[in-house]
Amino acid sequence: MRGRKTNARNAFVRNAKLTLEIQSLCVYSRRLACGRGEIGRRARLRIWCREAWGFESLRPHNEKFRLWPEFFLPTYALQHLSQTLILAAMMPRLITLLFATFFVTELSAQFNDNAGGRSTGMAGAYVALGDGWSAFHNQAGLASVQTFDAGIYYENRFGLNVLSDKGLFVAARVGKGVFAGSYHSFGYAEFASSKGGLAYAMGLGEKLDVGIQLNYYAVRLGENYGRAMAVSAEGGFLYRLNSKLTLAAHISNPNRAKLSDYLDERIPAVFRMGGTYRFSKQVLLTGEVYKDTQFDASVRTGLEYRISEAIAVRGGFASAPRQFTFGFGWKLNQWMFDMAAAYHPVLGFNPHVSFTYSGSTEK
Image 1 (cartoon, rainbow, N blue to C red):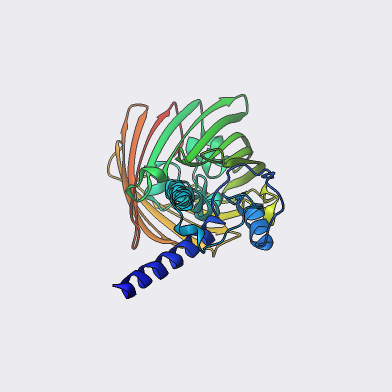
Image 2: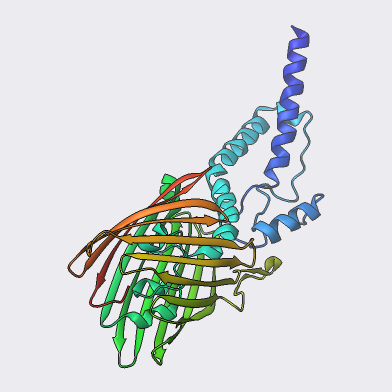
């Protein structure tokens, strides 16, 4: 019996030591000095945590921690239990922060690269196509808008509401050019990124269209963890070699807008170059090379077949990350309903739906 008590006590001591080590990483959400004395023995660890994460120790720096014999006393045991419960209650916030840390790098360069059901159905190969959705892909394509276009989309990535992706645009021709506004949002209450843009496009002759856009980025963490903002620009051109072949190129965020001074965190630049070939009025083939400065280049290709004036089916493939896409579109007068899905071999499906109102647009 005595041996069992000794083993239980040793296990309790080990757990207490582990808990105290974990507590040095507990959250103090505001990046303020705690005002509780000197930094203490674990100075390097605490300074790193404060600079990297905005964390502070849950316990006062000048408090002395002795595992023997205080942890056997009722008052200390109660305090230790309360701190452990606080740590457990904070776990959702810690998970949120880890979630944000992972996804802000992965998704910051992909604020809207698949906006619109037509684009998603063709694996995002949209740089050489022209309509109102070009506000998210290549602003030069906005020059194809003849009167007024508007659209809205929603994507539920991998069936998770916390990875929901949604956005909208409006575009109108004013004189010789087209003005457009777009907005995109990703995430949920605890972590969200958004991008708003104002664009202008115009034609320079019968073959060349150009466009430019100014963007405002925002990344926000819930529970008062903070937010970051940045401003950048993007633009591109679209050149029609003939009635069948169109070439285009686009660059986004060439200045690599800074989100945070710590570790010089920046939104990566994105380069896109590709073309579209129309075999006939019914069949269209499009492709592009998509290069994010943080990742390997991706080759995207898509095919659209118009069964009739009202119905179109689409398919596509992207190499990095590898995914297959498919979708369809249904046109009713001046309204267009597009539905698509992208399939990742590991993560699953991304269902995507969009609605478009078009006064008169060349597809």
